[in-house]
Image (cartoon, one colour):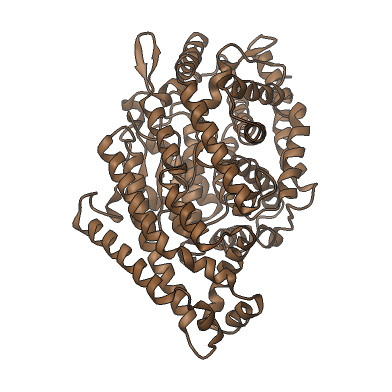
Length: 621
């Protein structure tokens, strides 16, 4: 898939793993001044002459490109004395870069307030124009893939085109699932009124929802945060408010889910994908058997991970079972620290700097140059993400910062993405993007560095227990919860092939996987059956979620290597990030002696979570 079509097909590089895991924060006075991003590095304003000029130029260049090269690639490839094919690839990359800049700006501007109709119109209009331009470019990768293997290999060998070998070989993996040009054109043109339109409906519906708690109307992010309050009564009120509002809107969410699942089934059928998740595996450049091994390993570990931990947590609360609104509750009788923005920044940068001054230097640019948007605002996109934009610019990070320890971990997570995106940028628009499975490596590693740094400074047993518990909960949310989400999606998409699902049927599927994954120590009360409806992954990026578990287990394994030998590790790690999308996961992990194809690989990552739970149990004595 081309760089710009990947931007058009998703809202951002990342959505939150579990939006409910953010905690309610302190007052604005405690947090200090929170930064808002400066998008002027992309464009001064939506109505700026430079944006309008670039949009018109991109549309024109795409048409000229099609007129110049369509139907001529085989001739250019056969003429070894000519630089025609490399010139075509470079021209294509230049246009993709410009389209990516335009679309990135429109998206980021829209995410700042998705409830604003002016912003929504600007985003929608830009999306349509970029889609039209992409239609003119669509032929290029299709025509490249129709070239004979021998011919394309000859063109790549010993020529400047060889620089793009990773990209060429990557897109040729899509060849078995490509349709003829007219059908591909139809799929792209219809995307504006199909998948993208339903994504936008979900976003705007979520942004418009209001949840009533004690007479006050809250948006999604603050009400989810109530379920992390120290007061159990407040947590219960938050959960009931979420359930009440979602229940009132379930028909809309069920319609969106049914439509998108059917849309995917149609695309998969036409493209010849056998399994419902095969298209995601292909885009992630990971083999189905690798993902299946991961899922099987996590399913088998449920009793040793989530069931074991939640039983321990229920004991801390003096209960046999925790209510579902207590799952991420702070531990009893332990004050929860509020981190000001300055403290959060220093905590993360110190942890990054102890590992690699170069890594910390890149992360510092995000704070110094207005690349972060941190405050909670009505209408702002929920959760957090790092958007790569384009290599000629820089990434941006969106947070909803509330000052709690998990918010600091989220900052470390998103900055990990940002550092990765900066390091991969020199590969260019065609080869900088990284598959989701590997994209999570840097973010989760950034969290691990920050956690280990804080833990090393903590000698108080009570505080240490709170930190370990928070980390275990994050890991369970990242591994167990995300594999449960993946299992739910598989059930939903499989059932949808037999006909449309009612909202009650979707709720039943949701409850079946939640009970299995969370275990008997969590009581799933009335209302929890609706909680699938607010999770954006299911809408924006079907089967995205296993990438989190992949990344977490991979990072646990990497960190184990780092603990055994620091010498040269940071250099190898940053080189892995700088590779961007130019190498397969087997090549990237080889310097660390790791192989995700080995079934035992996943046990390494899962055992680290078990060890942390074991340490928590030892603190009980």
